[in-house]
Image 1 (cartoon, rainbow, N blue to C red):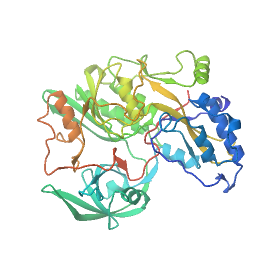
Image 2: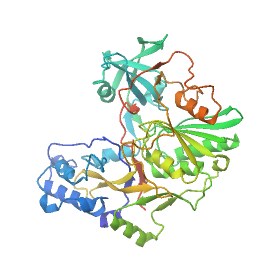
Image 3: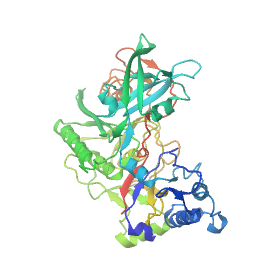
Image 4: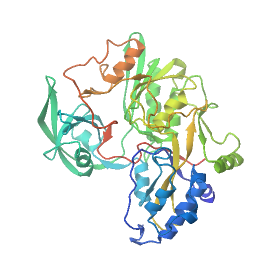
Length: 471
């Protein structure tokens, strides 16, 4: 356990399908020269034998080929990757990956849902679900509800849309529109260039006065506490929003996490502490379950309460005015977002509306070589989280089943905060204050999507992960 004891590491929950940066041979990416595969592989084995959640299921080191590529060698150690450990990974450039974990990614700043626009299910359009604040897309005038039909003149298909969005540094996007329930493909064009983006996750907030209720509505897109210049910038924005909710007398809350794939655990504690009812700083938000060696180690070092993480004291907490909290979800709602849902359940009613979540209750650590002999890094699962009741039953591909399943397929998407927007309208219905299901302003069309979850133009390593410092 010496490596994890001696230095601080980052703990996170992994995104299903996130690919490692693989190389055909063991390259020392620090020098660009061929490295000693045996040394890299021995290091990988020692790290995993120490801290991996399923260390006791690993094959004996003598049974493995030490001359194999690190990618192949690592793959032999992962426990049942199709079922139990879907998340552990190897990267050939730990510095680049860490930068992405810090929330910085080169992107247009567009989240979208691809949907088929022909009966043969070949051609797709990208229905913009979110544009990050101050991103290149935002500055170019793109907004939620826009429809991208072509990139650089190429028709988007089920096979090319993802690569066209992610590979292009600069793209000429053709925008369409739905008119009289018919998609018009060529209405205008906009040219956008990618830039380094650290997006503000506090995307939108408002107070809706309806049916005698004061309803706070918050769209939160990732759990990031701040920037390099201001470490608490975004957490403090959360506090400001909840201060406004408190001053407005909010007595219902709709938390929109449909675009939130996870992030820093400290921000999850902040958000949970601003919401929770009937709990305080002495109450458990979540508990970590490590392998047997580390449970013993942490408790001997820090006491029996070592792996219990509690709510913080937040002056802008509105929990004493809430009987419940509504959470809007999608298949992209993951990790720290799921921790919020699970962690609040012992203290208040949590009504989830939308789709099943991603199902990520495992946490892990990104570990690099302490001697900096190479840039290889391993991201391995260390354990799972439970709530104050000991529950952690969502760590499957089915995730958290919504209280009310609602398909978010009416396109183009209405602006956040519009009372007729599909998921917000469903929450208002549940409260008894909405006119009816799927009331829409203007033309709308229900389409079949080509992806189970909202996507980003450049996938971010932070998505699907929950990060924090070592205890």
